[in-house]
Image (cartoon, rainbow, N blue to C red; front, side, top):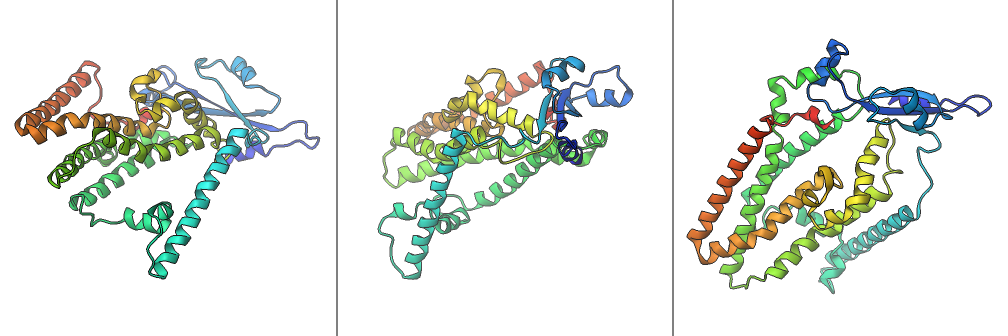
Length: 359
């Protein structure tokens, strides 16, 4: 980061020459030297950067430095670091400001009603209340769920956050990459390698809660309305996801900066511009080319939603034909285990997730 800032701050006295930070990814290959050979095992890209005059274009940089031509230079200057606001960015900011204003007004009304022991005129008036929603978020005594699930969710969430923070760290510039390679081979790294299994716990818990809440609803005499079942799920997830996609498409240029920020923008911004629709339809793991997704972490929403939409098959069987429903779930579980084992063996995949593969 220091080299990045130092480069962009270079300005000649006559203002004719300004610093430009140009970065590209290279693929370490055997044959360069012993250290690079170590990096070649599992790494997809390793960043190199040069500080050059701003008159040099990225195309000229590619022509002059033709090492690993499949990757191109991305250059940043002080001028293009924060471009002018676009119409889309202005519209997104206005939209977020409206949401923020609704939160302020809703919270103020909610607090007023509570202090004066009054019931809200309409539940919709406190729908955006930060106070009420925070209480709901941290409530572990809900009657509609198994109380022990909250603790399991907490530990799984901490595990997943740890894994993502570690991956984010690996995507940051640092000079001791070889130390990371050695760390990956130690027993201490097992906790980080196995973070993908924490996601499995969420899928398992989600399925458990769907069945549990469904059975509670049926036992209370409610009818199972499948269209409403689907609509509730879609409306619960999509507004927040849509707002996040808007930020990724229109505001990434203005909310960050750094040596690799241009790569992050390409990763999220361009993919969201191209695949926003498949994200909102929760089919991006099937519809997108080359496994690209808009916002990498939202792959889980697509998988979880697809399983949710398939769940009425097993729910109805468990309700009306319990033995058939249990047989279906057992068969699906065994089939999943066998298919994963086959794919792992067929493509010689590692048993555990390797963080260095994210490069």
